[in-house]
Image (tube, rainbow, N blue to C red; front, side, top):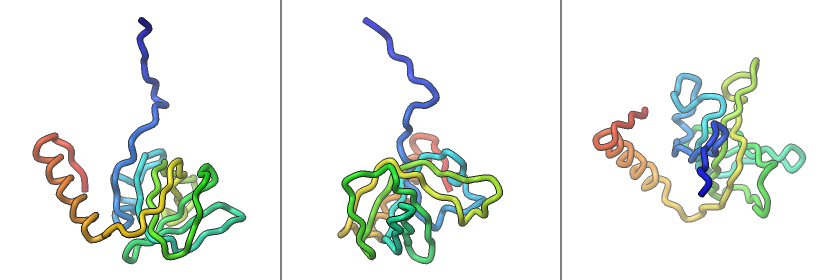
Length: 133
């Protein structure tokens, strides 16, 4: 029986993060960090495959060039999993998520989603020793 060893390039699960938590001082805001972001589609460029999602007052850019079979509708709710790409010399607001997974989640209650995320983090901190913001 062959043993399997995983390399550093193993795909990581996307950490659930709200858009308003992504700023340059956030522990989630790191080049290559694997995140799961949810927001309402504010704009989408077919030419560049860049989408902009919004939640509350926060926005974030999503590179969708690797996604297939997903149709974009302005004002629909989407969830993306991918890695943060921060290019040297660019401002923090110019960072983007290089999406590897995307799905429409219309109908999801964002207030309940935010509340469940807070409860999950509280549980993880208490029982698993995982700290987050």
